[in-house]
Amino acid sequence: MTAETVRLSGVTKRYGKAEAVRDVSFALPAGQCAALVGHNGAGKTTLIKLMLGLIRPSAGGIRVLGEDPAAGAFAARRRLGYLPENVSFDAALTGRETLAFYARLKREPVAKVAALLDRVGLGAAAARRVGTYSKGMRQRLGLAQALLGEPRVLLLDEPTTGLDPEVRQSFYGIIEELRGRGATVLLSSHALTELEDRAERVVIMNRGVLVADGSLGELRRLARLPVRLRVTS
Ligand code: ATP
Image (cartoon, rainbow, N blue to C red):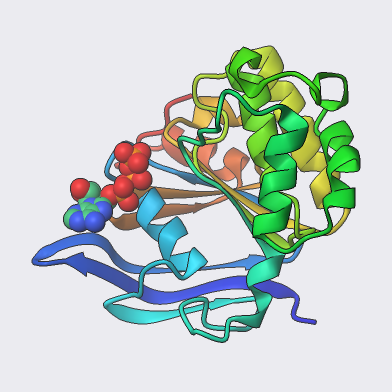
């Protein structure tokens, strides 16, 4: 068991001549809820794809649960959950059918589905077609999909964008419960205001560069100082 779940060391990702991410380093201890904040194009999704092993860094190294996530034999893959930014489901399937489909795809027991739907507050809507779900309900179904392997690391790409504050609160409630079970949660957001003070750690990206890393309180104090750091709340 490693106390450190994710480590990025001097990570750069280039697409041709363009640098999507430049020399980024940070580590996430087990059980931390951290936020990755930045405007559009800051490099958040690129960092998440690197941590998932979907793309390889042009320079630098990444470890997730002690392994290289881009290696073919990434044994910890099952313990890495992911909620994409724009999750979309087949509107004709029910919530239960949708999650059962993902369970089969991920070779997880279909018997888990009912308990997971309850856990994200969708138990009563399990037999309803996803086409009738609100955006908040679809996000929670997406979270249930990400939780299928009981992940130790959960990467959530802009999970609360477009949700109203009440739904956002319930989403954060589920994240708190996960952290209580020892999971590390990294969520990306384009605005600090969306975090509702829930993330204990904030990593701020701007144009591919890490510009600040600290607690929300520390960053807010810094923002009041005459330094070049834009904090949106
Ligand atoms: P958003 O909130 O819009 O998703 P982001 O912070 O997630 O923004 P990224 O999607 O990581 O930002 O993009 C960072 C930069 O890398 C952008 O300038 C983007 O155009 C560029 N980029 C990302 N993916 C590719 C790609 N496959 N090919 C070329 N450039 C890319």
